[in-house]
Picture 1 (cartoon, one colour):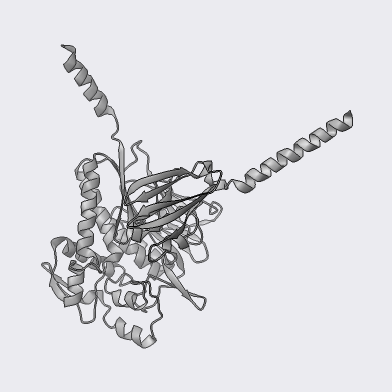
Picture 2: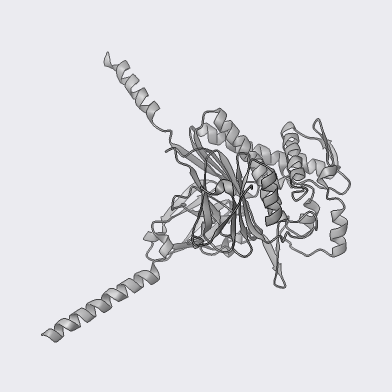
Length: 124
Length: 332
């Protein structure tokens, strides 16, 4: 009986460790409660709580006479492809814990994180 | 029925006691993203947007028919009163920085490809020749009439956003706004304090990675940052940044990675951020000791942080810089 009890504890510990590990690995640490906002021409078109995203999602935003394809994954967001001339927005990559917004100037599209941590604005 | 006026009065009192709600807007102008937040009526945002578009129409170096474009194509001409006022202030800042800011350096910015994104490294001879036209001190300005020296082209890009932020802030204060935040593409102007009476907290981006170096707490002040990391190109492993040193005609390489200037006057902070990036740490410390009206937060290429003593109580390091020793530049 004592043996069974030990095994139960060992299994529980392994379970707890793997849950902790997966949380650590899959939930970006800085993403807690961070909300990405997508603006077209200054209008908020979509707001996504990145910390609540569990599966990746791809959607298109029509902006400035063109299209930006947005990819959302747990804790992060990026412009995957676009038909703008310079593709600066695509090359910017993931917006995860960086305060700098993703900007597609030709399409007047901006994706940014709500500045958390008591910061009201950013320079640089 | 008799109660109606009383109720109305009570309601009015209640409403007057409430803080105004925040309104904000995002707009695209001057090649950047602008965000305005005001605790006040929608009119304040509309006025600000109009101001921004008017300023761009006057000051853009590329927009056809702007004061600056007309001057650059003709070499001389009459400009609007607003343009003349900014030009006068800009020339003063050029003189204050002994030409580390030079509003006639545009031909070199163009030669390096920073105006179009078609980057190139000009030949030494080309740089020498273009430098002959670079001299803010030969720009003549009298009663709105401007004359440029031969070969010179004006560009007010290093001061236009700071100036525009000043105009918006002035309009908001005159209209009684107690709380607002103007962010013209990273050129921030805080109007008053936060609605709860606290300081506005402005984060300064880390020049080496995502995240922040730190933050400054301000009220009624501009915060402007310049850095080579903002726009550059690389060739054969060498990085060429968008800020051109008017002395050498080549990308500035002073040992600073990021320069933040804060003070009451946006146009001064804007112009100084570029100038200090060009002049480097020692000259910047000297400039600060000899002048009032601004404070500096500098990050060197080696990741060291220097602040002037006025920021000692309001600068907070963040995101991995918490243990970096902060060097304080003092008057004495």
